[in-house]
Length: 199
Image (cartoon, rainbow, N blue to C red; front, side):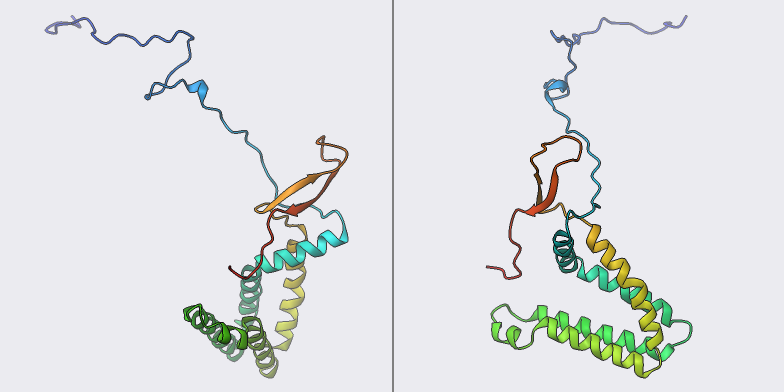
């Protein structure tokens, strides 16, 4: 009764035959031809091998993550100023606006203004803005908030800078012990020299 009223015809599509028994995808290539990459869980945190390696990591990571570290300190300072120091909070936001405006204007300048970029160095101007912000916070009696914020965030920033091993431009050197286990590994060595000047 289940086939009542229907006409069944034999199938015209031949079943695909694979001599080795390997399945094929829609393009006709064998699925075994595609090599799957080995999955490795990489932890970017590691203990530096020497004090020199730690100081090199601090310098590289402070240069690479400077914006993130600054935002972290700024957010903590902002949160500590919210409950009691409204005037200091307003001054902090104004100085942040001045620094952002300076950076945008510096970026908007054409690249051929090398004289302007040498006279008004970005690091000097941003350092002056940071010093002016600190003086304003101390003058508005928020110096204690600034000291507590720096005492809480600077150790965290330095800890991150010491333990974060950047793998985006480094190759790990193997020691005389070879590739077994983790013994005999040395500090990472940069592949390219990152210079701030674009040629």
